[in-house]
Amino acid sequence: MTPFDRGLLMIYTVVTTVLSSLLLMIITGWWQQPLYFLWQGPYVYNEQLYLALIFAVLLLMGLRLFWVSLTRRNNAGGKAVVHDYKLGQVRISVLAIENLVKKAVGQLPGVKEVKPRVVEHQKGMGLHIRVVVTPDISIPEVSREIQQKVQEYLAQTTGITVSEIKVIVDNISSTRPRVE
Image 1 (tube, rainbow, N blue to C red):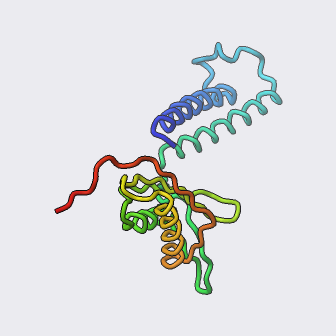
Image 2 (spheres, one colour; image 1 turned 30 degrees about the vertical axis):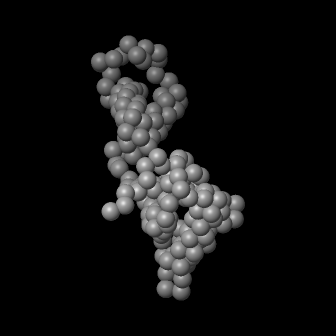
Image 3 (cartoon, rainbow, N blue to C red; image 1 turned 135 degrees about the horizontal axis):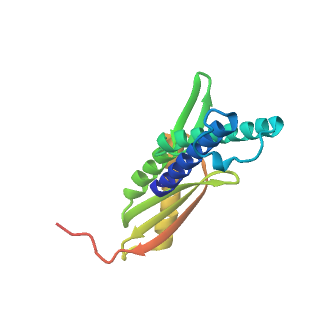
């Protein structure tokens, strides 16, 4: 959730919670003098009970949403890939897999920038790897090499088999590496 959305949710829940609290107090008779003009109809017990239940549920929902808007969950790692073993589970976050892909592809000659993204695939996990390459390489050869290297490296280090690897060449770098 973006900070803007979090702020909107917080404002909405504060307003809903305050209004639900006021209306609940008016309906139950705890606070009849101020804001009495909002509730001028006769008090019918069944209708009052139903309205009290509705506003109580709204109040609980508002409090829950307000709590969610204030608590910050750490989703930096994203979902985890799970391996079940005899002694328990091993979870590898999506962020860790993306960093392993960056390391594997970044070592290849001719690759300047790497931006991997883990995606769900019908047969398992897939990868979309965006790269910027140098102008003096063969793009088809580097693409095949990237796919092969990532497949082998992830299988060797994590035991994960990737069902699909798409390589997207975003740009060709105009600067050549310096020779020192």
